[in-house]
Each structure stands twice: as structure tokens, then as C-alpha cells.
Length: 161
Ligand SMILES: [Zn+2]
Image (cartoon, rainbow, N blue to C red; front, side, top):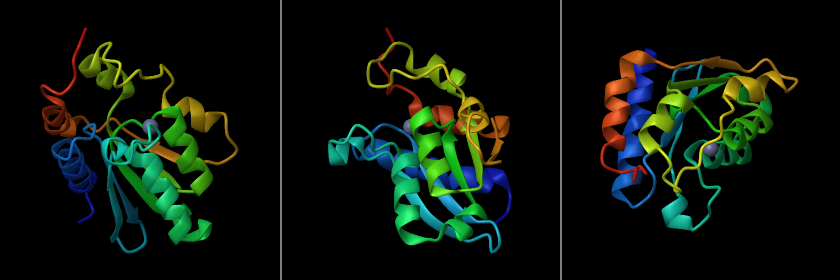
């Protein structure tokens, strides 16, 4: 498995599981770029933990940082269904994960969530957060081929106002 869409599909599976478990429909996975192995999977865990910072990418970055060295993580990719927010991008930065691939953009997500207060998104792309840092984290997305599948997991979830 090497294609972006295969990995994003696995991340989307985590989003589905998260939603089914009463969490918001976001998912992420961590892949070792040297071996192609999926090292970790994580869905949003806000509903499970009552921790408002338990975004999939942030929890995954924290778990990864406690498990692997910064050297190893620099050669890993975090695949996430949606463009990571500034908090998550910051967490990925500090964990030293070298690459991010996201399915749909923050702007596309905002179209899905509207003004739902469960997701008051920032208007600050991950590219801006990375550009303000001191590491050349690679950022790829949106992956338009995955949009329909990712959007489907959000269908009927958000209470647009
Ligand atoms: Zn986030």
C-alpha cells in the first residue's frame, strides 16, 4: 500500500469509527515512510475523553511522540481526513512528524460544518502555521480524489446554521 488514497481511506475509516462512537467524524493515521507500515490509527476522541483538545491529529501526534524518536517521526507521514487546525499542526510540528497529507481543505470543511458550534474552525491553513515555524514539514492536500468519500462521513452530522 503506497498510494495516498489508500492511506487516506484508512484515516477515513477511523473517522467513521469515531462518529459511530459519538465523536466528531475525523480520523488520522501515522505511516512509516521507510517501510510503508501503518504505525498508529486515531479517531477524534473528544466524546470519549471529554477533552476538547482530543482532535485525531493532536492525540496521534502526542501518542507518536511518547512512542517514537523525533528522528524516526521525521521520516513518517500523518494522513488526516481534513486539513489539520493550528493546534494540531502545532502538535505535529512539536512531535517532529515530517510530512502531512490531508484529504479535504479547511475551507471545504467549513462548508460542511457551517456555523455549528461543535467546530468553530480557524481561517488559518496548516501551510501558514508551518511557514511560521523553523522546520520544513512537507504538506500535501487536498486530495480531490478522496473528497466524496470523506464528505460522506460528515453527511448529516453537522447542524449548519
Ligand atoms: Zn485540530
